[in-house]
Image (cartoon, rainbow, N blue to C red; front, side, top):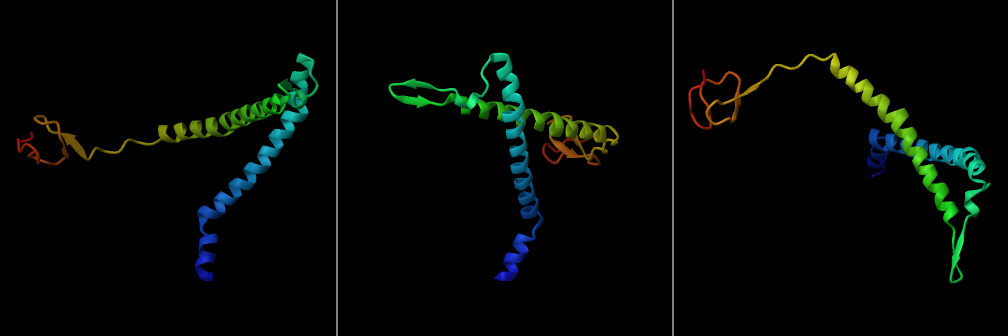
Amino acid sequence: MFKEFKQFILRGNVVDLAVAVVIGAAFGAVVTALVSDFVTPLIAAIGGQPDFSNLTFTVNNSKFMYGHFLNAVISFLLIAAVVFFFIVQPINQMLKRAARNKTPEDPTEKKCPECLSEIPIKATRCAYCTSKIK
């Protein structure tokens, strides 16, 4: 049983996922620090509020702390922007360049002119409607 567990742990997918979780957590901490230390004070300088986490309102003695939520929304938007502009877009551009250099594969099937079914390219008779193919 220990041998199977060792094989499971050392499987590529598990290790890749573990690395992704660790890097993701570290990246989240960096973005949270960026939001709380740079973005929030910059927005606060424009709006006049020094820290969003202290923003609250009260209804019937219930305190709603919407400032912390506002910080989380800003953090989420920054993470999404960074992932999109620095990961998704470059990978999409790289895939487009790679696909541009590929030559298209020769077709292996064609359509029957009578029933429009897909048949092998070398077929002389349709397997579906049995019509002769020129």
